[in-house]
Image 1 (cartoon, helix red, strand yellow):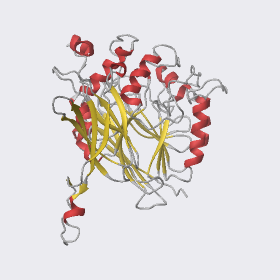
Image 2 (cartoon, helix red, strand yellow):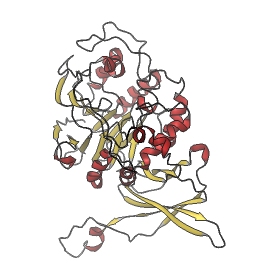
Image 3 (cartoon, one colour):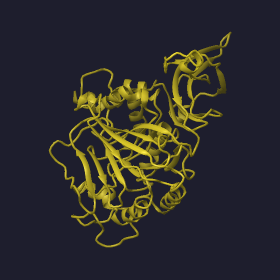
Image 4 (tube, one colour):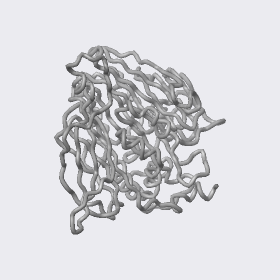
Amino acid sequence: MVVDFVYRPIITPAKDLFVFRPGYVSHDSARLHIRYSDGGNLELRYKELVPKASLLYQNTGSDDTSIDFANNSPWESAGEFGPPTEDTDYTSTTALLNLQPATRYLVELHSRESTLHTQTVLLGSVEFKTSPLSHQPARLRFGTGSCIKPNFPYRPSWTHDIYGFASMLDHSDSLDLIMFMGDFIYADVPLYFGPETEDYRRLYRQVYAAQSSRRLLRKVPMLHVYDDHEIKNNWHDQDQPPMGSAMTAYNEYNGLPNPPPAVSGASYYNFTYGNIAFYAWDTRRYRTRWETPNTDSGEATTSDDEHTMLGQEQKQHFIQWLHDVNHTAAVKFVISSVPVTAGWSNFDSSQDTWRGYPTERAEILNLTQHIPNLFYLSGDRHEMAAVELPSGNIEFSTSPVSQFTFPFVGKFKKDIGGEHTIHYRRPGHVKYGILDVDTESDPDTPRITYSLYTTDIHHGKRPAWVYEAKGARWR
């Protein structure tokens, strides 16, 4: 059992893995992530999926409002392109352009094999729906969480699975996207295999080879930020080795399918879904060592401008984004791989989370307190907390999607440093959130609902806890 769990990436390195999944989907384009190692040119074919209701019942007076999709629209080709190469571990990210907003598409990936007669082989298919036009009212339902380890808790099986993704599948038909907030792989748990790029690639292949990964990710676009375990525990050494190897593998599998970076070569990014805005921080590459906060309040004992988690360039870009979306987006989400709340207070979290950077944290919260309907989303701690921060913004920190939890230890301090703890939950190897955002029903006052799911309660079929945030008038 121990040998299987620890050495599975070495025993079964999944060299022949095939991946075809949607990444970032905008109102007029989609990024598609491919891993294919068999050679031969590839071709994308796509078509609109039109609801049966709009075709069969539009003029008949029938009350049937079937939402099944009819395969009646013509196929279009996005053209041929060369296969991925060994240099990128046989991965590539390509873009499908000139799509229509708020439209569902079926996309097929074909290989073209040149023999006496050119043959086309269907490799796989994905479905997705493009987002509404920017600044348009929208309804968005998306999943959040972090931290996964295949086959944890351990079960004897030749094919390892990810039990949190299996639970998410129960809700996948209604999800528009999933925001995964780091620790997609554990490069150093339970054993660090080494600093080479292949050492990291094997772990990504192991995750994508899981049955639930394949089923979930062909249906729901997943966007990513990375955290420490994509590199090494509590990483704060910026671009020192093995950062380069780790980021090569991360970009090949998770980074390039994300929205375009805010700055060339960076991993932080922002995007919109209608009039709902997102900003995803990079909390690892630019951070310095932590400050020493006051152990009771989580606030800095003295002001220290040299300690930073975001770095100056990213922070200034974020501040400009706040200015841009303040009165152009009804709801704003800031994605942080580590919690903003100072509630987690043991030795590790006092250094690794925003609690360890109280000066910069106070600077940011001082800005976001003036931004209506801005929420923080985070993971990392293998626990769940919903907290009203000193700024009045609410943070939903949710993890693990599929990993260990801490049954007996943990120092989450409620209601400290001007915070108000709305809900806290420690137990559960599977925990993730689903947010429902509605800016259509009342364009001036949005509705934001967070639902916590855990397989410990209702087997993950129904929420374990639901919170409806009070939307504020934003314009």
